Amino acid sequence: MTMRPIRIIGDPVLRTGCEPVTSFDAELRALVGDLMDTLLGAPGRAGVAAPQIGVGAQVFVYDADGHRGHVVNPRIELSDETQDDDEGCLSVPGLYFPTRRALHATVHGFDQHGQPLTVAGSGFLARALQHETDHLGGRLYVDTLRGDVRRRALREIRAGRFASPSRRS
Image (cartoon, rainbow, N blue to C red; front, side, top):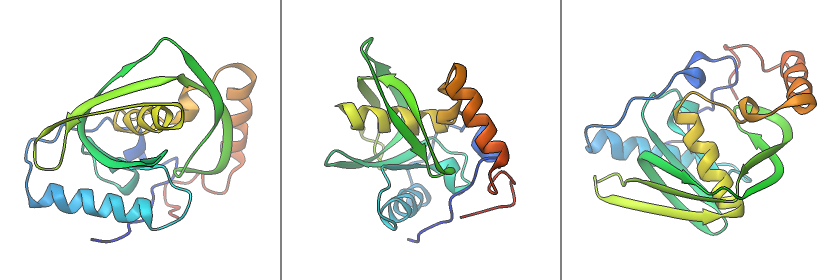
């Protein structure tokens, strides 16, 4: 297991939908281990999705509100109630914007051994589950922004030194 570099906005892997996992084997378990090492290898991280380390598989790990784990092939259900709070992303480093998310989220999927699992949460955990699930569909949190906040975010991204696909942190 190893801490892997995070892919930065501009890298095409972040904009490509991931393939479902079909083999629950040693390779998948190694990927989950690398994702968890990458998540826990630096303070302040709430989640890491496979495309953020350059892998196009439907897998993410999370560590939010005292809950830590992983989900393979997630399907997400969202509440109608919403929350607004600042959100950031390892793949868009240093930028945080107010982002509307569902207040409650439930993710159904599998663990690394192919056993069904469900993760449900509210508040920050719900936000993390939505954020990581979005990554698997090739979406970044800045894609959810609207109006002036979206325009400001896009301006700051274009001005950022990390906007090149060759830049890795």
